Length: 310
Image (tube, rainbow, N blue to C red; front, side, top):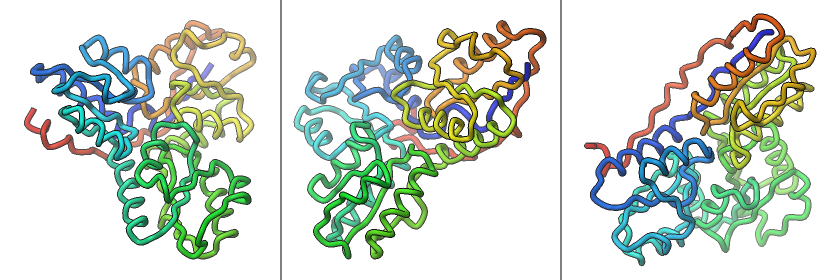
């Protein structure tokens, strides 16, 4: 059996930065550290940070006054920031800079009297944070079909942003539907899908050319991981989302000659290595480990100013 690894896969720059922020805040040790929501959508990462002393909460009021509160990589609304300030918390922003870019674009368009359509998944924490930038001026759509029932006040003053972790192909379809129904809509010059999401989906498309089966290592709550499963499945390749090696079903491997393995942007490499070892154990004969050409994404994000010296 051949095990073919995608490249790139796993941690992106935004996730690296968010985890570093929590670890550096914990290392300072001068006050308790709380994190609003999961810092990234991966149980292994969250459990590891919890063991180091981080406490994960959903509401700012759940942290005691004077504590450190870190905003997750998915971003938060101004209302959450206001509540944290009222609770006298020392806040550190681990929002991915690419999500912050979308927030800034929303505020710019609202200042110019635009209504905004956001393409995203209802209930996702990133969507809640972005919609919260201008709750009275935004509409959420998930599919091209949703566009047909969209009601806006002024079609000539309409803008669009997207969740950063969507399917590249689906987002393009929705934007095409928006442009067809609202010809004057201000679409992003390039969609807001982040570089890591784009690159990992492109890598899965390459995997699907050679693999008979694709395994995506990631969390059920991870939007970008779920999209990787969809991308492979749409190319006719059986695909499964697993959190770790223990979730692999040996029956999936019957008759399989090449297994493609990738990981969502919040998945640590140790979990991928565990899947590789499990595949080797289950292989009927020698397992050959191979990889798509290595890709260095070359992206690094600065830490918040208050942690740079640390």
